[in-house]
Image (cartoon, rainbow, N blue to C red; front, side):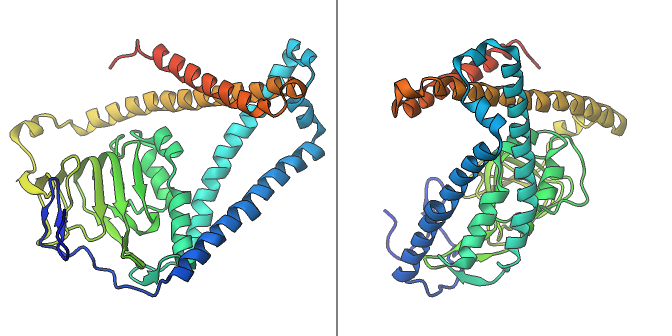
Length: 360
């Protein structure tokens, strides 16, 4: 148990000599919290759900061909053109939704972010808090980071989302498949920095009643291990090696040219003699990068095809279950959930096992 009035940090925890509570409080009473919750419920139940259901009903009414595909008779499954139409429909929906999601991600949050200024204190559970949470929700996409991570495409994706990465030194592996942030527009990552995986960029500071956004800047020519949370107050400069799960110091001098391990962190040498032996010449690096890009392009294509075919399988299940609507009644929804679960487990297990013969 941490004694009252004390600040502890680290693993295992120990008394901290730094103050983490740096955000001034703001007016935030119970009424504000209740109204914020009611507004959220209203938006979901009174706007989002009716729009979704109404949109589906409108599509089925205005496009008879779509109704014929989703609710066919039993004889439809013996004709090849029925499967071709479902395949084409699933292709348009799958890749169309991906494209639409990306366009929304790079436009709408950017407009919302103008209303929440950095270095200004806002109360929780208000319009600024809602906009901040919405920006974080819309710009963090595990779908795209899993698709593009560990490839030459991920820096360009992050720049489109809002990260400041110029000038970019392409390594082919600048970022892993998991990277999270609170505001991409307040994130700057230095040239030549490589992030292994699961980086959480902390752009916001919170108190019990308020929050504040700040610019988060990561130095140049550094290497980040796995599962690191990097705060905006981080006192880490250029040419640093940060070990897995290291706690970033927020006080003291700016660390440069060193390695940091542990929680709380301690310094180690940035490089050792054997690191120099692993350096590649510029021509070998370019040749290796071109080869990696080719292999990554194939991997990205396979990733998309596997998930498109999975979506195609679900699109086939819907009309198949609709045939038994009269017999099943309300149990139709339960049967659909069970079959989709079985398809999901079976399909991705089969895909995983088919790749086991591959090796480095």
